[in-house]
Amino acid sequence: MTEHEQEVLITLEGLQQKKEELENLKTVRRKEVAARIKQAIEFGDISENSEYEDAKNEQAFIEGEILNLEKLLKNARIIDEEAHSNSVISEYSTVELKNMETGAKLKFQIVGSVDAKPFEQKISNESPVGAAVLGHKKGDLVDVATPAGIATYKVMSISK
Image 1 (spheres, one colour):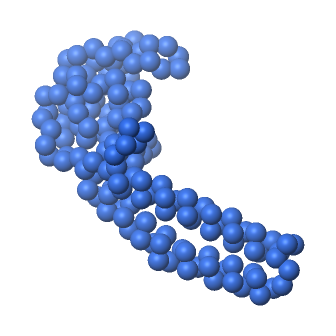
Image 2 (cartoon, rainbow, N blue to C red):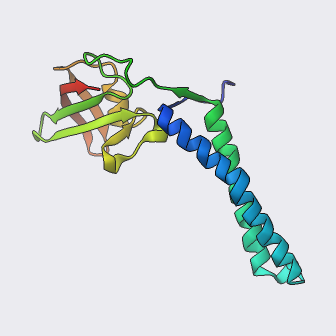
């Protein structure tokens, strides 16, 4: 890993999904777009051929996705979800917080950015809340910078 490349935290399941996605792009999608380009060339003059332009744009997109996935896989660090304790917040901890001003409770799992799905209560370790709570224990007060200002949360529980 060079100094410009950032380590990517990912679960074993997430890593497998990314490998399958890469394989699909390389073996299926590349062939499909190559066939589209070939067919578009057969239509004649490619300078005014929208099918050809669309296929070339799709080809560029696919190649970009392949490069992104290869870089991600090269820099991936698999997180052992079972290796952390329930006493300190770490990646893949499930955390319940209480907003000290409003009393509202939040419950979410901290995951790597690749596995983040906010609508499924999986937030990135790089997000403002995820980064702020890492390393804290049950009962700690944590200040989080939000667009509306600093919010203070109390760590109510930590689990796997």
